Image 1 (tube, one colour):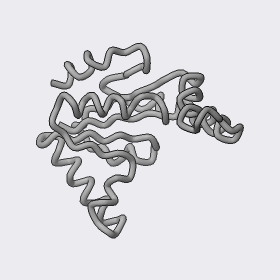
Image 2 (cartoon, one colour):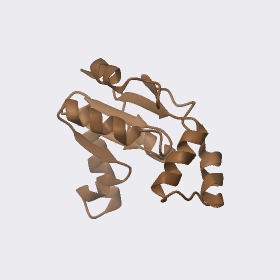
Image 3 (cartoon, one colour):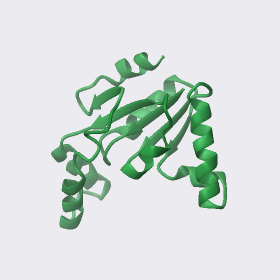
Length: 141
């Protein structure tokens, strides 16, 4: 089974991926982790796409995506999970990652990117702080 978890930074994608990995035996990839498959980026990307395609009906793979440019790597048959959060939650979590300080340019970037995944088709929509993650995992089993 291939599970694609996508959404903006600090929405809870990694938390969901960790819970899934704790419940289902799976390999988890994030962003450009696929580069570890080969020294050449193009070769690594091709290898990763084959791995993802094979995972649709094979081994469990979770791919966590924070950039819209990586969405095309998800093949047909992947379970697509959109994870969203309101802008204030995202800013608060990002500030926490930056030791309590959210510089103006970073806040502006988060504001600009907010909602960039909202129109992407998904099978499951997780709203951070509202959706029960255990229920999501049960749907995957």
